[in-house]
Amino acid sequence: MVSKLHYISQGHSPAEQLRNIQRALDAGCDWIQLRWKNVPAQEVEQVAIAIRALCEPYRAKLIINDFPDVAHAVEAHGVHLGLTDMSVIEARQIVGPDKIIGGTANTLEDIFQRVEEQCTYVGLGPFRFTITKEKLSPILGLEGYHAIMHQLRSRAISIPIIAIGGLQQEDLPALLKTGVHGIAVSGLITQSAEKETLVTNLRALLDEEQIQA
Image (cartoon, rainbow, N blue to C red; front, top):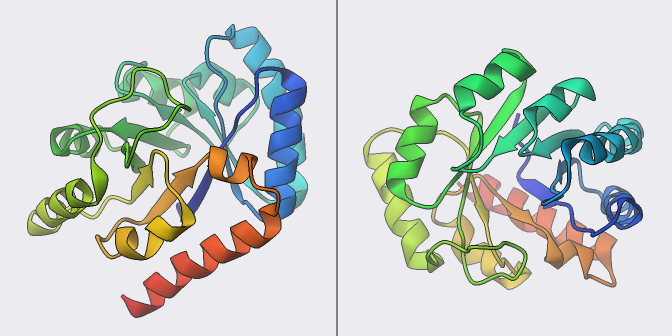
């Protein structure tokens, strides 16, 4: 089961990564994606070992961004791949047949590719401008999600779509009406002074839309 709320980690050092992830877990996040760019795989692995231990008491899933070898080595629940990362087929050979593989998409055509590759879920974005990601792809906005989700429904494609990219709490009611499965956030949770309240509110909005659907 793919969670409706993904936390994408932030931090320029192991200590920052661990602190931010611990706080997200304490706030109620149960799906953690370790995202640590421009760092050697060996360093990512060392941090991932510690994060795996943090996640276990919460029964939270740990997804490693970009590094299938690290995901396999630390027995993470899966890996998330960008469009220019290792192919899904290669990653599947490393992490195994039962692991989660998420894939980034920026367009409808990207989603078709991810479906063909048999990804577990698709991270679709960006919703709006965000400083979290370098080399940002064209902004989709609400209308972009409406158009893409309409096309997927017309083709009976039901892969879980996770919206990502500069999302704020007030975006959720309208965004969820497009039919996306859930959201992935980073700075929204990291920078919040009231993380537990925020996560509770986000979950309530996500669950409410599911009930209405």
